[in-house]
Image (cartoon, rainbow, N blue to C red; front, side):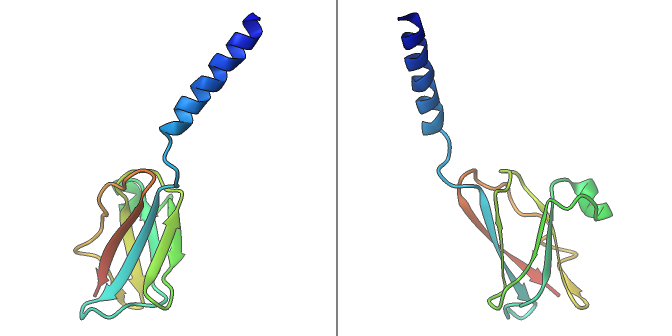
Length: 116
């Protein structure tokens, strides 16, 4: 009988814990635009968790390339503020827009980065 009560209690605990877990993985959708507002296809986008990694360009947390609509999508991220490097040819986002605000856990986060 004690085993049954223990199992029921354990199942109840797991149910409560899963109720507080976000239903979606934390994601980020970045729109990349040039200095006049055009969408930028084929830009390299890298995310870094720390400023030191960003400055040294090491330990990339995630990376992708923008699609035909200038969109870069990342899924399964930590809910933190990421440092971003976006490059295409001789254009990048240096001098502004190097960090995205803290991502909301379990949400579809969005941001825009301008390269010039």
